[in-house]
Length: 311
Image (cartoon, rainbow, N blue to C red; front, side, top):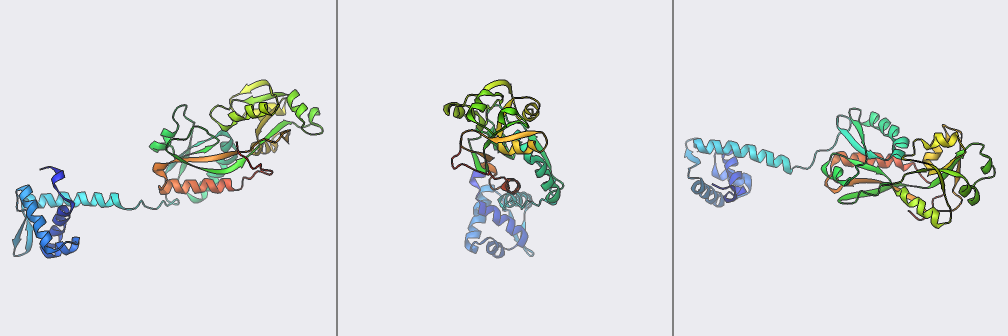
């Protein structure tokens, strides 16, 4: 007997007959006419070569094979109904889920502590794992569900991913407080004649910064190249080097170190900080809740003099 030969209404009828012991009541339960139910049972008896249910003084009672079949059908239908049900709501107060998020270093510095504070209040049983950006096909980790979200200025998350820009950022220049060249502010000449700390931008929107500055006629003389922004403020605060970095990050470090934060000497486009998630999990309650948390966290981040154009 092949499963392809069994119709779903026959299985529903077997389940209803076991519960009601009446062909008429079983038919009414599953929305069939009594005649259609009788014909469906007759076909199933022929296909399975067993009477399945026998009329007795106590109504339609299963044969031994019918009882075994009905038990299996009952379990299978329960699993099927469970699978067809809408996804249960996510209850943050009682969840023990571990959220895995790919965050840029800028986002980690500025928002990771805020995220943990928010989770402590609303979802105290949850935890967070910050994952590195994969070198190849990073969208696959979102697709598999291994990673819930990616938040930052990434350029590699494309295939199968949805995205939402959570805020816009612009660049600023930092120098040590009291730097004599910038006593009267930033100028193209001072910018070009200074030695720079330059961050490797591979895989981030920042890789467009160098070509834009060069196109505008602003040269950067690299004294040192570093892989991330983490070491830049400390180096700049203790040398005569300058650096270009996201304005929000520059403002943050200026509260901790003796730094001068200045606009670039020319206007260049702003860029978007974006949240990525995979289409598979677009309607997943946990994922949707986490996305809303990030949207709230970033909502307060606004650029003071935001240009209209994005990188």
